[in-house]
Image (spheres, rainbow, N blue to C red):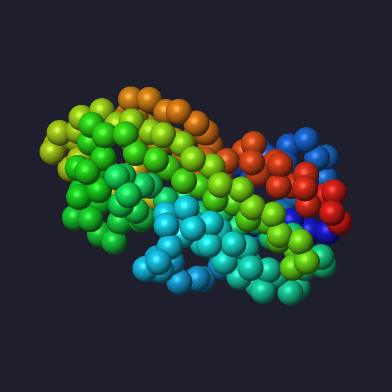
Length: 195
């Protein structure tokens, strides 16, 4: 059996390594799934993020034909503010728009994780509440100018400069970064019991 992470995120790579620390021979390969991340008009935010995690895992499985007995983990993270899904910004203006919306507000970060070997599939959804302080236009301009928000859901990274805007968090810090450690360890344990 071989573990595969269907992601190009360096944050998820680091977190998955942490999740498997108790297994002496835990290692994994990386594949880069390419899926359509367009929300379907009929799906809720929960359905959307869970679908993307599963599709990434399935796409990763298809890319892992060279691996003996691959077990593929896919994950996706979205930011939801008052029912509005904030994905990765398309440009700097979009990042500024998202940060202005999040300023002084509490939003929800949803991270879904799916693990499949083609025969068994397990998944989890982690929800975390994050409250931002008030952001000035100068704060937003400086942060967007750093380039950090451009590849992150909601246009911020809690684990780096964006953490300066977080007033409080209720839930899983690692899920906000991109991979909920407790839930991921549960999935790894489930898969090991079924193989």
